[in-house]
Each structure stands twice: as C-alpha cells, then as structure tokens.
Image (cartoon, rainbow, N blue to C red; front, side, top):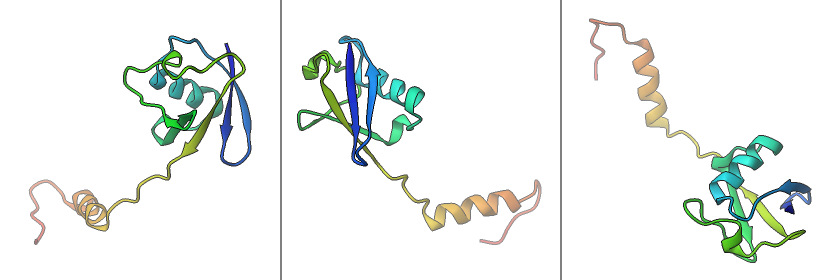
Length: 100
C-alpha cells in the first residue's frame, strides 16, 4: 500500500509498504530509499512514537494513502574522555607503556 512519509522540513516522500512490515523493517526501507540512517529516525503515527521491535504498520492502523511523520535525532557527541582514550590507544605501540 502507498503511504506518505512527512518530515519536519516539509518534505513529503512516497513509500510502498506492507501492513505486516515491522517498524524496524520500515526504518530500513526509509534508510534504503531516502538515505536517512535508521538509527536516527523517530517515526510517529497518529501522535504515537512507533516502536521498533515487534509492532507492525497494521498495529498502528496506518491505511492506504495515510501518512507517518519522521523526526531525525541528532548524532550524540563523543565524550572528550572517550576521544582522548581512543587517541592514546592509537599512539601506543606494543611493548611500550604510556604514563597514566
């Protein structure tokens, strides 16, 4: 069935989905067809956030020519301490101990 994916930037993107498709599969389809990473997508249908695990498109009562809204979460920044740890690991050589 055909539905519309609406973004907060005002875009309306067509999608072809099946009622038995899980939300995780729907996010993967959006990533494949429209390039938005599935891990950053938050999908909303009729005011409810769509859960990924076992719920399907039909569970949210989305009908032919209906729509869902996609919000995009920003990537979480890397903590400074974690970045410094990674940098020290790159510099370390086998058999050489870095001061703590």
